[in-house]
Length: 307
Ligand code: GDP
Ligand code: MG
Image (cartoon, rainbow, N blue to C red; front, side, top):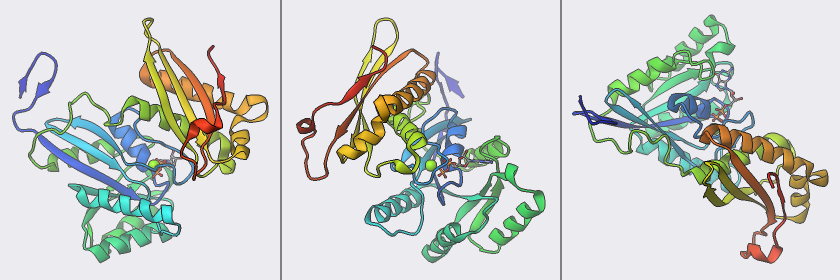
């Protein structure tokens, strides 16, 4: 291995795209976050939080592993759902490795069964990763592994706990060993291709999920409006939460602005932990109706948490 002052550059680099597929809530985001060691993808106890594909990047020896976190593959019903499924499959098919995550407790249930059937139908081989081994007993695990093996499409069957980290190192080592020869796609110190602004928006969106539960407006989006690195080392961030109706704006704001204040505080604390500096966060809630493309029409509503 040849090294420069800062960054080791291997003579024979390897790189692999690793697509992580699986039913919602099987632990895809948790696994990628653990592998990459920094928060790059939303982890939520609720289903369907991952809308966009996020790349998590890690180095293992001479290999660079680029993880693709796909939106959950599930039975499409609504139009948006169909688009998500298509996005998930295209991520899967472009990858060097395909990992199907399976919740050890749920086993081959409806969702996972349908994905396996689709893999068989498409003639796609992949590796099975039984996750959440911490939550079930060994005989159940072995039974599940046997049932998966019978499907005849899995090259490897791994057992991990993305939560405790058990088995994750072995999985990563195996992926790194099997990576095809080729140049690294990203600088080695880059944890994600997601600009920090997008990451910050995702973090606020995750807090909205956590704190609004079933009241969450389906069409809600978060955009980072401004990002200012100040002389004192702190970062000032302004974000806009877009909803579709006045009634939804009221839900997000909460009584006397209490709810958005809680959301803003939680998001700010998390951001400041990830960015390792003091963060000032201003959140605004705007109504942007589907048919009205001009958000300015509706004016700016907001609260300043750190003023
Ligand atoms: P995704 O929808 O597949 O991306 O799943 P997430 O990564 O968001 O995880 C869904 C839920 O499962 C979260 O509550 C996680 O904390 C939990 N989870 C993920 N991995 C494990 C694991 O190894 N063990 C246990 N017990 N829970 C896990
Ligand atoms: Mg996810």
